[in-house]
Structures are given as C-alpha cells and as structure tokens.
Length: 296
Ligand code: 13P
Image 1: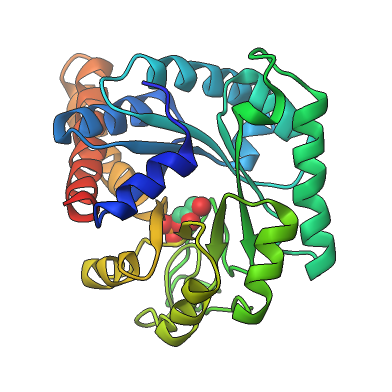
Image 2: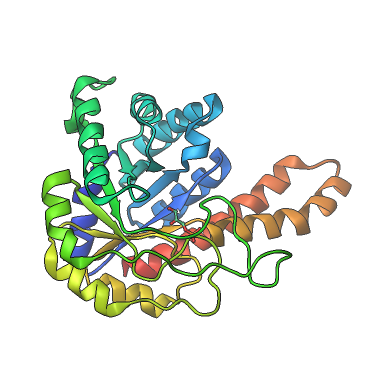
C-alpha cells in the first residue's frame, strides 16, 4: 500500500524501530523484498539507483515498482536514490517514485541547499500524474560526502583496490540551518559510513551522530549499511536513524546464488523459472532477516 516516507520512518522511530531500504535493479529482487515485508508485516523502501533511473528501462522499472508497492499488503515506498539531475527526478516522479534523495552532497553548502530547493520548485511546477505537485513527494537530502561507488563494491585485495575509507563527515553545526532552509524531510548523514566494502572494520563516529541528532528532529538516514554490524545499526536507531540503506550485501548474495545455481539449472532443462526461484529466495531471506533486525 502507498505510504509517505517521512511519516513511515517517523512512526517506526516512535516505536523504537527503523525501516530498511533495498536497492532494486530489477523486478525479481523487488518482488522478493516486498514478499519479505509482507511475510514480516513490516514496511519497506524500494530504492532505484540513479544510473537505473537514467534509462528508459529504468523508468519502466519505476512504474512497475509503483504497481508492486500499491498492491502490497504493507506500506511500501519507491524512492529515487542519490539524484541530482532535475530532468531525471521529474521523470521518475512522473513514472511513480514517491520520494527522492535530492543529493547535493558533492556541492558546497549553499549549492546543496539550492539544489534541494530547486527540486521542490520543480515538483511544484510539475503536478505529475497526481496533480498534487510537491505534496505528493517526500524529499531526503544529504549533508557531508559519502565515499564509494553506489553500484560497484571492491574489497581490499581486489586487483587495484584497497577497500573504501570514509570521507567528508557531516558537520553537526550546519545541520539545523541546512534542514530549515532546504526543507529536507529526512537527512542522510556521513558519520564514517561508505558505499560498498569497508577497508577494515567500519569506524562509525558516534560522537558526530549524537551531535547531529541533537540538532534536528527530521529522521536521519544511514547509507552504506552493508558491512556495519547489526548491533551498531540498532545503536544508530536510538540516535534518530530511522532509515537504513542496503545495496552491496543484497547484490553479493544474489550474484553468489546465480553463480552457484546457473550451471545446475541449465542442466535441468534450461530451467530459468527454477533459477529465478533461487534468486527470489536469496533476496527474500536477506530482506526478511534485515527487516526483523531493524523492525523488532
Ligand atoms: P551499500 O551498497 O554500502 O549497502 O550502500 C547502499 C546505499 O547506501 C544506497 O544508497
């Protein structure tokens, strides 16, 4: 069923829970994630990566995810992740995304605020299929820079790679002003988290998160959750982190399953249906376990 991201995450925080968001590059994974949410009775967020959304097929995927979310027995949001291209943002909302990470984190402080405000203005100017303009959309923004690639993950020891180290922490002193002036309804923070695989153990800066959380009432978002131990995700939850983003761990699991299962399923009469069933099971089990960890 349809839900507003800010309300969903705020309600989760009020009952001591957080909501996971899973990047879905395809419908098989998204279906598995929604099934896991229904199985656990918990809300979930389907994230679409900006490189996916920049293609015609990606826009059709967003429309398909819209239908999947609306038909689900639990609240499901469809979010365009890490977007800075206004045209792609407007098109994605028209296609069915109900929330967007307006990501100006690579810009300066004022330019970042200006980008989020530009997205609000574009939403107002474009009523979209709902005709409700910005009222139909929830905006997350990001302050501080997150190192790493959103779509590829390399570990220390992979040829030419050293694993990902944190960069550009969120400055707590900027948080209040940023949220007020940008109108962001959720705030993604950089507190030692990275996209992809961590170099060594993640070093979360709890002192920074505590100071950020004292500066704002909007729910905080932790990107780069793959590789962060569950007890640390639960600790983050007590400091205002109500949305937690996963991509790498889900991808790793699916690719390992495809690697192990493709040959036996080819031998079993070119059994694509069976292979997709294994793909579904892998994604569903990971999503259900994560939902239970964060939602209980
Ligand atoms: P990971 O790939 O590190 O899990 O990060 C996912 C993410 O933050 C998507 O926005």
